[in-house]
Length: 507
Image 1: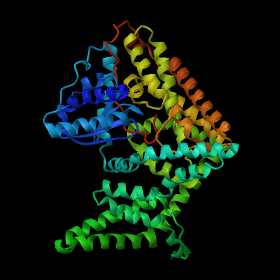
Image 2: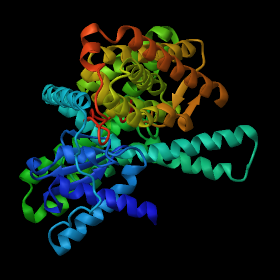
Image 3: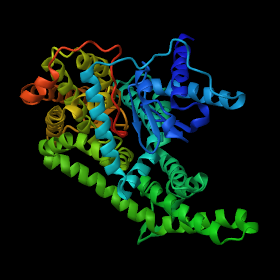
Image 4: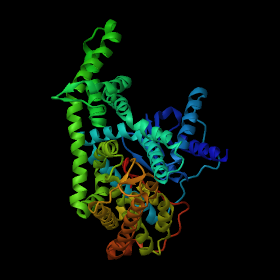
């Protein structure tokens, strides 16, 4: 009960600071963020929101996003929805509780870093407003809602594998296998549903067309001189099929008479999109999916440490550019094909480099209590893979520490890549978590103990390299002169604005 009261108090503190219930047009959440559609952005009090204890940061994107962290966001969101519903039924939103926090007066240096982070975020948002990046954002919106199921099923799959290897609970393991595999067997349907919803069509029609891909009866159909197989094309085929269904549906809405719309439009949408899916998209998407899996295996088998070094080092810049969202369908395809994605553990090393860099900043600025307090408050989240407060609150505004954090990520990625080249694959059965939170989702072609040891070794390499690179090369004389000075401690830690979601592969 106390936990529920705490979550409701957090929701009650947030609601008036986003303009009240009347200003909220939509509510959703992902792994770490409460995502709000707002009628009037000017009614939001950003500084007061950042001062709410449970809030790690805010992100202004296609929706207004409040970073609450894994676990917390899933508990606060229902309470927030209830408050909005209650306010809609009874009138204006209730004021925040008497003990809700006020912004306070952060120390100068931490405030300067937060301002720099906000400016960098605004510049990044402006650059990311290109058609290609907006398309990638749509792709992310399709797959991000699937992450909780991927995580839950992934952990159950790992538990089942452990029990099978140990020979324990043999009467239970078949049930666990069914729980772990059921969602993945039908993931194409969920992708089709979300795709149609995102592109402005009828979601159930998108799901209906995508369901063709996983229907066992397609094994009796021949296309391009070969029999189709259930699941051929996977999530990429479902994505293409649902997008096609949206365009067919919109065309029908434009030309079919209203009196016949309820009968003709759904029929033509499923019929036309279904035929194209069966006799075209399934084969093409299947070839692309196979090529993705083959290339990922080839890259790490032959590139090894070099490929891991490049991937781990470039992931933070990819996040800054918004290009990391293009990896979400690739991760999902690999999980669907192989049971795990070998790319995510390598990319997760970017977060390890970031943590090492932040610790180095802490020791290099012994006189700046304000920044040190910010780092102390953000480090636990950083260790669990939530990197926004450290990125935008510490390393990126300082400049050079962001580069040295990338160096830490590169060496951590190179470490895991080397073992992949030696034949020890390290993968994740789901996307979303990073850092220590990825341990329950690890899988590979060796024993679980070996897989965990390699990933843990990569984290240690990332931490250590990020720390050393930042400690010795992350500060010039001007930067030290500006920030290594005594400041009064902040009334509350300053939390900076965040970056777009790593969803699928958090840093």
